[in-house]
Picture 1 (cartoon, one colour):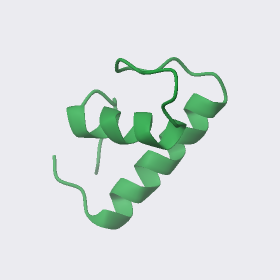
Picture 2 (cartoon, rainbow, N blue to C red):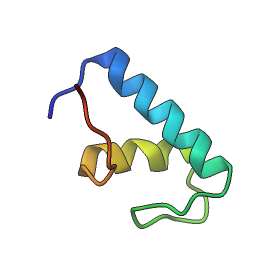
Picture 3 (cartoon, helix red, strand yellow):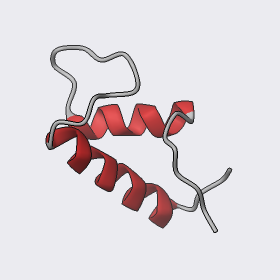
Length: 53
């Protein structure tokens, strides 16, 4: 599914907040990864269970 830049920003921001609050990452991470980078990779790989109506 394609998202516009505003939708991508909202999804990545919400997911980064979840990760910062202790949610487990859905992709492989490195020790120095920032939450925003992990969230971007999750969205790019399509592993986030998010739907668009």
